[in-house]
Amino acid sequence: MNRGNMRQPLIIANWKANLSPGEEVERARSIAQIAVERGLSAFNGIDIPTLAIAPSAVGLVPVASLLQREFGSLAIGVAAQDCSAEGIGAHTGELVATNLVGIAASVIIGHSERRAAGDTDNSIGRKIAHAAAAGLRPILCVGDATQSAAIEARVPMVVAQFGRATMQAAAAGWPLDRLVGAGLIVAYEPLWAIGSHTPATPMDAMAVARGIRAAVHGHAIPVLYGGSVDAGNAATWFDETRAEADGALNGLLVGGASLDPRELLEIVGAATMPRR
Ligand code: PGA
Image (cartoon, rainbow, N blue to C red; front, side, top):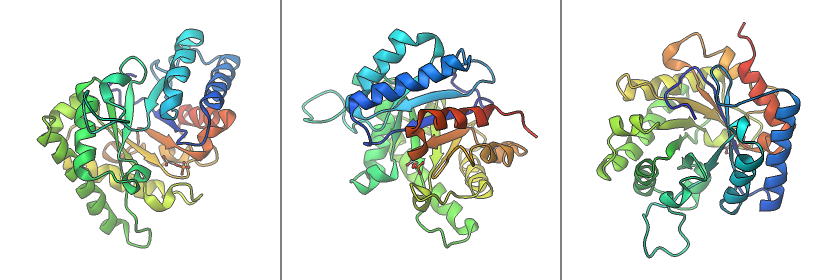
């Protein structure tokens, strides 16, 4: 991934726990083969969106090795869906960040489905710190649960959630400026938009992006949107937000629609469409 390049949309395919590792390898192969057919030579070049696949924990190694071994020139990235709040040691069942090195380049942290399964601001902060210390790019998910409230009321809630997680990361030795240097990405994912076919509006996502950037005092921090993104709405996130630097989105976190290789590549294509 090209750290710090704000012009380059980043599309992350979050496959959650939808597929077996064998299916994940086959889907990754299809994505790479379709990309080759379409003449997409690399996903990390200037002005070409960066694509990263986030398979399940057991799919990480086979998917990463397939992409490295057979499709290395495409430079499709691999992201983990989570990592441990602990480091190497006696932590049965944990997926420690240092063990992801060489397999994944980034880690989704604090996804609402992980928060529902027990993640707290404290554990999220420690996960961010461990990911950054391992040289992995943390992708911190934040989101509000209240679609009915006005965006002016929701933005401070989301910014506060971001602030609590990053304060905990700071307490674990990773203050914001170090995290920005480590390539911290924020993904705005309103809970009600996830898997609901009811995305937020680009204007709402832009308001959140603006709020996050104001809270980090001018640090150049990439902000993604996630929640019911599909091939039909993918372009709108960039078309409608690009006019304003502070509110611009830097990419998309895609769940359900990313399970279909053709649709995922349409989303990638939408992110490169010439802007109107
Ligand atoms: P969705 O999921 O695209 O299926 O709404 C997004 C996510 O949870 O990351």
